[in-house]
Image 1 (cartoon, rainbow, N blue to C red):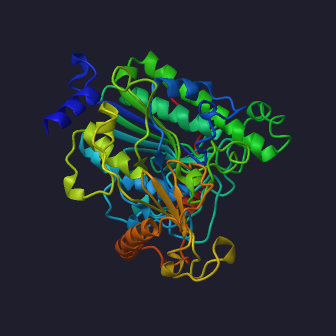
Image 2 (spheres, rainbow, N blue to C red; image 1 turned 30 degrees about the vertical axis):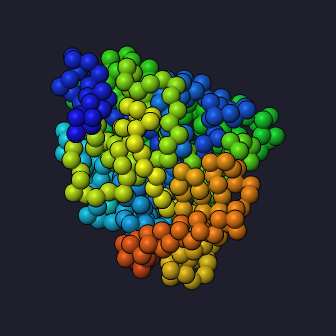
Image 3 (cartoon, rainbow, N blue to C red; image 1 turned 90 degrees about the vertical axis):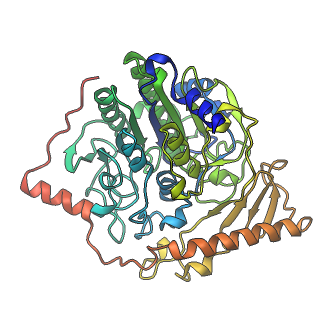
Amino acid sequence: MKIKRLILCSLAFVCAAQAEKKPNILFILTDDQGYGDLACHGQPFLKTPNLDKLYAESTRFTNYHVSPTCAPTRAALMSGRNPFEVGVTHTILERERMALGVPTVADMLQKAGYATGIFGKWHLGEEDDYQPENRGFDEVFIHGAGGIGQNFMGSQGDVPGNDYFDPTIKHNGVFEKTSGFCTDVFVREALGWIHEEREKPFFAYIALNAPHGPFKAPEKYKAMYRDDVKGDEDAAGFFGMITNIDDNVGLIVEKLEEWGIEDNTLLIFMTDNGSSKGAKFYNAGMKGAKVSVHEGGSRVPFFMRLPGTTEAGRDIDKLARHIDVFPTFADIAEQDISALKLDGRSLLPLVEDTDADWPDRNLFFHRGRWAKKGGPDKYGKGDPDPDASKDKGFAVRTDRWRLVDNELYEIRNDPGQKKDVSKQHPEVVQELQKSFDEFWEKARPLMVNEDASLDVEKPFEKAYLQQKESTGIPDWSPSEL
């Protein structure tokens, strides 16, 4: 208990003048940007000077993993649990909805006295009860569905015809017509809110939809990469969106400094899964990308910076995951969450001491995305029974091993997964398979969305159309920065 208290004091209280105020948490999450999609991770032509600077100033978790796709990762971040255990087994067809009644990290921080805001992508349910204002967020500025303009069978559907440029956004229940490129809009709104809330602790969740496709970016950013990608317009847009993100990270850091809150703001940068477009250019030597349960599908950047507290340039290679974020934030906010019995554990002991005790554990991955009864074949073919897909597209990761279906890799010595050693270590395969079987038995009853009807209205779209018809859509009024 004494050691834990020392850790909390070290991270949470930078100096005596700030001792009464818990540290702010500014959490940036990008969409479909892989571990290799950063210059600081070795990408040969991508320009990310501000993220490179943040990398240099941060403590970095270099063996940090998420889920193979976006909604499952977001569910794990919000709940501190494996996404299958909160009903999220896909990104669409009602299986992106995080089960009701699950306490969220925003709920916890709200109760701890934090102002809580989300800016960008939610993607954990469109019906009112699932929306972020009912899951712990005070301030909500989001697009609908899993991406701007997306529309799928079931309840998921954004504003009709919405676009990355001048998107219509739902702001605390009111739709507003914004002006500008989506990432610029989300960051501008988040900064305006942060400025208003800077006198009390805040949790700003900046969940950008970029660089998810469609691969649109302002022309000046796309033009930077056309030669590098040999005229591939989608790739130029993908990398252009990342450099635009980088400029916005620079703006965020600039404003934290200008407003005098940099030294009491924990700034975190991470991404939600492997690369959707960049892996064919550079993948940091890993196998797999978005949707894959290989290393390249789950290993992502995770930077933590709190000036004067986190150690600049320090790498931590202990196995960590998205389920650890909730317990980490609870530690920072000094909240007892032991009754929740979460799957994750706080990262603070490792932030304080890289050699802190960190028992090995089995981490479970699954591609999900099996067929949906009544759903179209293009979104998943075959048997809609999840149990039929149990042993297809799964992985178990420990510090030393990665089991992918029936293949075994000694990942510590073979990060590129070039040699299957399952025949040399059948006992390891057996042990890891057994642990996955036990996980599945626990998770299966909690997959509560599998039989959800697709014959339902689209509440996000409906609310927009009703407002358009009754009062109209006002223009967005961003705060002066």
